[in-house]
Length: 194
Length: 59
Image (cartoon, rainbow over all chains, first blue to last red; front, side, top):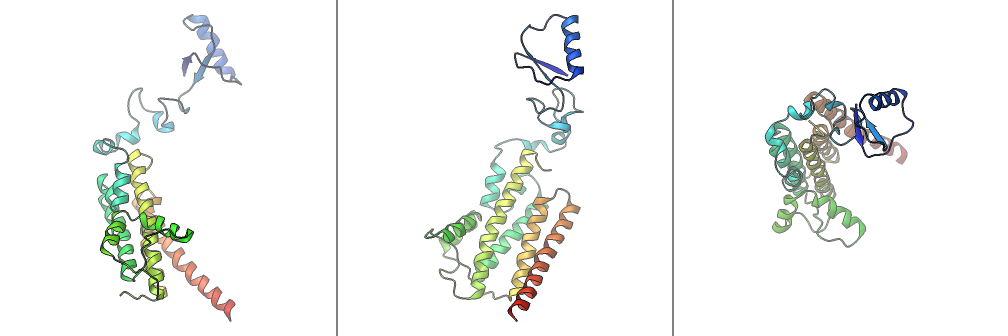
């Protein structure tokens, strides 16, 4: 149990805390007469934001969830896996040394994008109406794949056959899946996911 | 030009989406595989079921 000085007293106050406070004031008079604030381990306070993971750890030491991760993954720019994963599918996981996951994600996303291009799917370049804006937002999720295919002129300008419509949706969904994968890499980087 | 059938497109879509969902939504490899298979079955199964429903409605 910890006592922080200079803050408001929380109410209602449990009887055990009230007794503890009275005892401490009686035994040593180091506490100021002003209001005090009690906090316990496990509460979401500064220095104890890891919840149950930090209960068994010694004061000043890192929690077990962070101790088990590799030290290289916890250094550097925190948003680098997110940005790298967006630009190149799977790169965020590669940066975090998740080779298998990164390879599978890259194969799935690049494969889906490539099949969309092979089906003569449309790559959205402008935002003339709301549906085009949504399609453009989805396509932009592909990162460098989108920009390279725009530069090379891949895909079709107009959807004329049924498979081209499938292809357009494959490209958009590949971009959305890439965003999910990039956010997953960011979650691994921040320790939210193992 | 690649011209898959509608069902082949559904299966390919379900395969790729299930891989990404399985990896990103679960933590352990075993649960990733199980969730990926679960998503794949749901994708393809719901597409087949909805196709039959629409077929029966259209008759």
